Length: 225
Length: 231
Image (cartoon, rainbow over all chains, first blue to last red; front, side, top):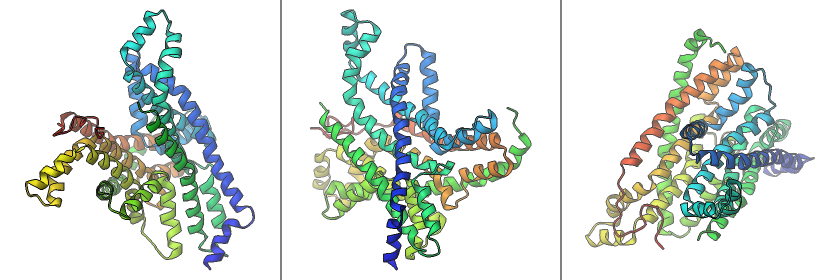
């Protein structure tokens, strides 16, 4: 009986469909992480602004995003926007919006941390040799903070992939949903398929996240001065 | 946007029940995760053979998979091989499985920050290894681990939001139900956000206050503040 249960995974296109489902998750988290990194830089620079009110607004945004469970944010964008503003996002779109908002906040805080840990004299020297703001960031600040930021951004990527698993709850067809479909389709012939399918999905997530978090640890130890 | 106050008033009791369910499960999960994390941190720091390798395997598995998938496996997978757990047991054990590894990492960095001479001094004044751990090492380690411990507590409370998938009537579940039945989405979501703020804001503020008031015991260790081993 155990044998036939494990065969469900390999029957027909089941395995391929599961991988396609996994790809949906990975694709969405990749898009979200790219947007987060780009906007995160802007947000991080805003967080070190001279103006108190800009810093205040940024701080409020960061704290609110951080303290709310991501699932609550997903519900607000997916259900709340449809009702209040009559904007109907697809599940995928809502996911990209929410995870980009969350990722921007987290990435922004990392950029802020890196910017403030940069010795003050680096900026002053840059200004002293006559660089303008753009040149200062491009030639002096960014090259120096990247070493600190890249491992942290890679680490944020694993968190993003893990958090993206929530999208099944707002109706996106991804790996868990495909798994459920396979289980339902085989409910009568192979009742015990659930353990294998969910076990496989568990290891799929592990197989995606483990290398990325290793990479992050490796980069961090390599670039530590 | 006009709020339906009458609806809010009617659904408040539902949120109140869900609030305490969320709180109870989060509390049990965090206590369990703290105990598990402490054990694993001690196993890793003492480098106990076999157990230490198993702990490492557990940490990697737990940190690199989402709670949602762990819960699906526990609640829908395990019954197929005869292990049937109730919703609550499932939810709490899932949270402990997830949180244990985060807590372990936090305590491990705390324990590593306590200088080696502290162990030796404790033993030399005649404390048993266990008493030495409880009275000398752990208080110092905990002070260093506190910021990451606080972050983990908040993280774990937030993670309870996926408990609705194992049929627990927590805050998310109530909100989703009300949206589905009455389509009073704004009110349901507003109450949801407020409920989580009521739980999480005080926790966040209390930990910030404690962290500010905390004094680090830096005996025989120059880099105690950074929480890292001196090299």
